[in-house]
Amino acid sequence: MAIVVVAAVAWLATTGDSYAIRLATLAGTQALLVLGYQLVFGHAGALSLAQGALFGLGAYVAAMVSLQAPWGLSLTLPAAALAAMLVAAVVGAIVLRLETHYFALATLAVAQLIHLAAVNLETLTGGANGLPGVPAVTLAGVALGRGWPMLVLAWSLFAAAAWAVARVLAGLNGLALDLAREHPSAAQSVGIDVGALRFTAFVAGAGLAGLAGGLHAHVVGVVSPDVTDMPVMVGCLIATVIGGRRAVAGAALGAILLTHAPEWFRFLENRHLIAFGLLALAMVIVAPNGLADLLATARQRLWPPQPETSNAVLAPPAHIIRQAGALRVAHVGKAFGGVRALHDVSLSVAPGEAVGVIGPNGSGKTTLLNVVTGVLSADEGEVRLGTDSLQRKPAFAIARLGIARTFQQAELSADTTVLDAVATAAFARAPRPTRAVARAEARHWLMRVGIVDAAALRCGALPAGRRRLVEVARALMVRPCLLALDEPGAGLSRGERIELAQRLRTLHSSGTALLVVDHDIDFLAACVDRLICLERGRVIADGPLQTVRRDPQVRQAYFGRDDAAVDS
Ligand code: ADP
Ligand code: MG
Image 1 (cartoon, rainbow, N blue to C red):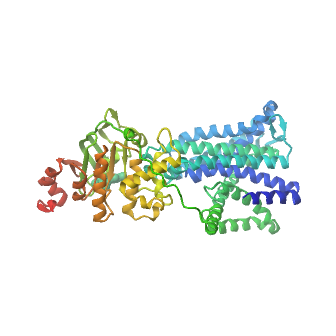
Image 2: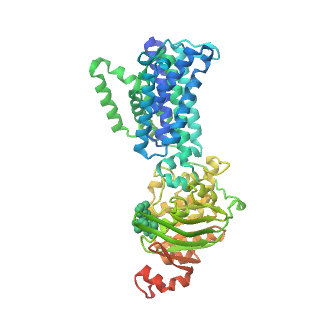
């Protein structure tokens, strides 16, 4: 890395005419823009099409401040970043909750509005002529010359921002963003406020776009509506995809290629854009995850990374495991169109109790767990935990009250290691632990569910049954008072199911209440004391295990016949 930087500087110093230096400076501003877009698109997974316009906004703000308020010359860059963040905060608060393509369209509309404002608000922006004569940057009262000083400033700002971003993401933040992007419901289920996380990434990314735009204005010396136009956004997107969506080095690589490659093809004259397009296409095919990823893979081949040496295990202090009131579900109804998935369902789970829910496919078991954990809101009725009403509480808030869950289809990021997948759940804890501390506790819960041997594997490499156990460990990391499990035994062998039931029993004996949905009545018999049977959205039996097992209505509903099969 250092060698590359030294070589680039040496090359510029020996052969560098002012044009080469200017191009390298523009690459630095572009790298800042792309670094910001990595936060929005790469980390938060939000396909914003406004990043380019926010860059343009920053350029205009820097130009306006330096032209109209000469006393504010040292403030141009902070003002540019702040203006972009403010606009992003307003836009983000309104459109971030939209689904992917609607979000993309909404940000495209915002970008067009900014562009139209640049063209039409002539008194402020100079209209189509723009604002010429933007002076050089002033730092602490000293005007920096163009050329080398700006080159150093642009790349120093990039280096500082890249260092800060990498540092923030190295903690639990990076893991939380990964889960929130790939499995938002799972992220909410461990208390992560996905909306707040996306909002923060969107605004921070806008800040970097504004800063980049401000620098651009000072480097070029003139701002015209072009800086808010679509080609800026397209360039940013191409550089992000070519360089890499998440690695900070990718922002630098993508930006350098984007600014320099068209120059390499200049000799092709008016066909140079075609050549650049083909090069970009070839890169996407050769390195679909970006150049940074390609380089990282090559480096791992040459110098394999040291396996994680720390095997620290940290059990949570016993007094921290929550005690809360009973879960009460009263007269809950939920319909999907014409299908009544739940109908006047009432039940309760006392603190520390272990309750099983059985019922045929489609009887409403998953819907019940979804209503309890806030994934769905009930149409009617009430859900309470102790004195807290869970009505209209978002899923992440319910998780923070101490109800953790697993999903019928395991929701784990394939590329995350088992250890990190579990450690992620410590993100919402206050105070937030370091990644090392979270990993040590994660190892404890992996031991409790019996898969600590898989800690270093990627989740995607595990068979379905074991993935579900990772989810159980992740849910336990929430330190819940009530653990709700949706078919935890599915996909496991009979032996593994018996083992899981025993482990759940042990957890239960240390004070955690269980609400376990499953098909397998023997599995439930080994881990719960009370059984609730659902049929077509109604509770048809609720009582001690043996009583419900013998209930003729249950046999009829569950097994389609009233014989002794249930006891076998
Ligand atoms: P179970 O988990 O007991 O198999 P579910 O709770 O998944 O049952 O489903 C109960 C009923 O609600 C089924 O008829 C199912 O088709 C319907 N249902 C569940 N979720 C949805 C949904 N998101 N949209 C439409 N119908 C749904
Ligand atoms: Mg289900």
